Length: 209
Ligand code: AMP
Image (tube, rainbow, N blue to C red; front, side):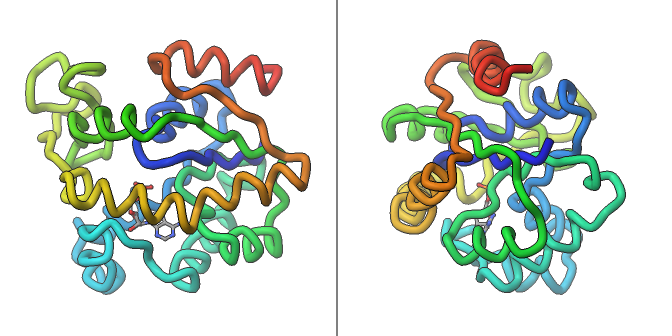
């Protein structure tokens, strides 16, 4: 199944995707994780996008589309994928339609106050990108990842000013995708306010899996 996860930052798309890949047996393709990996590796791409990610703004469509196109050409994505964080603009959605036909777009719906609370307490593993929360998803050992033992940190873009900027960018550039995919009859809404387990259950229900 070819899925897009849509929703504001902090809606829980990354956490949900981690659960959904186990069920669907398709790769989780997160453009945010790809960019952060490039930054950690200090590659040419990483050096170019670091300040953009830190500010909460978007990387240009051309760079992002090229990355996704290459990633989806991988053998492991031939049977399906979960796209998390892409597309984020109408031009990205139009470009995607040119090289892959998605089956469903899942819209994780959540109010701004909940986003602010979630992102404020979010901790990310430096090594594998796994997500934790100081209130809602504590790691077993404080400061360290349950999956790989890597050190947890606060992403620069989870700091207050960047979160405000990301929400603004979401409203202006990404939220129009809800109407875009609804018109195409592809959109499914999932209430993203409850805890991850309930959201995963609701996700299964709307998809009928
Ligand atoms: P995320 O982990 O999805 O919140 O993405 C983190 C950051 O990576 C975003 O704030 C953007 O700077 C960049 N990014 C991720 N996906 C995209 C995209 N589809 N288009 C442009 N920039 C992106």
